[in-house]
Image 1: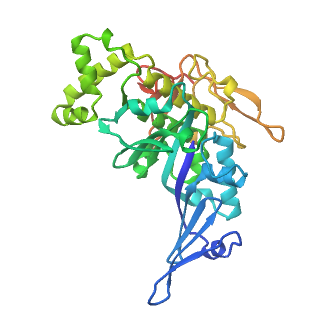
Image 2 (image 1 turned 30 degrees about the vertical axis):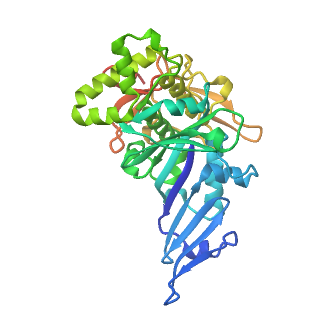
Image 3 (image 1 turned 60 degrees about the vertical axis):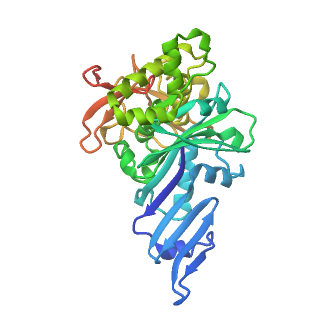
Length: 383
């Protein structure tokens, strides 16, 4: 779910932070004047930085922080769900007297770890480009990693199991947002926002849509089943530079050939990576929002959207969220705490409404089954 985050604190209490006994500060001073330019301190994987004695910046992996403070090591290969995220945010906010609504998000990484049904390295090897731009790769003894760098964000896909020497086939897919304009439409602005179900749903939509934009070659395609023309299409399409050049030359031809390539890969591949792995990406995100894995039907033909838990009762903030076919169920969250929260059920499609961030106008729907958008004219939502 949420991993690395960079926060800029509005109107911080610098003296209170500097005098917090949990922080041991290192200084960077001007050699000539002795003036302290920068102070840094570490707290369970979270870095605090004070600049010019008035600006406060906080960076680090919330996932690793949560595992570290619970004695699970500095790692992020396990699940990190909404309840865990809530505890991590509360831990940092309460320990250092921070108001989450005053902590502005400047950069963020979010994604999922999934158990891959095929060898992770085969999936990585099959990834050609993202939105026409080639992946760069890093291979080593403990690293199988591909990323695609765009102006505002980076797409990453890598072998998380290999990185941490795990026996499971763990694939990590994530987005690293460099400029918040990329996800401004999700409504994410502050640390408080990342706990809101509708904002997490929008981030999950962003994740799935970007996965859909990865061009994959197929697994175990038998060339004997292909005719001459099909062999040529697949042979040319495996080359990332071919798509880069074609997109520059003629975007319409690029689009048609890409669709043809995808169609052939889906027809002849023994395993359809975009559909099967893409589905798992969506399922895992929904699961981490609060569902139980044994009752996760959202992308597998069921009708119930998993309950969004984590210690808060969320009541359709600002009139957003799902407004179609809602029912109320009483749900047990834990032995220590029980709350009545919204169990969101929609019928007959798995559609999430997408609103304009400033006016709250309904723009379209997101079909979580396919990761595609549906125009409002195609599907009406009856309150």
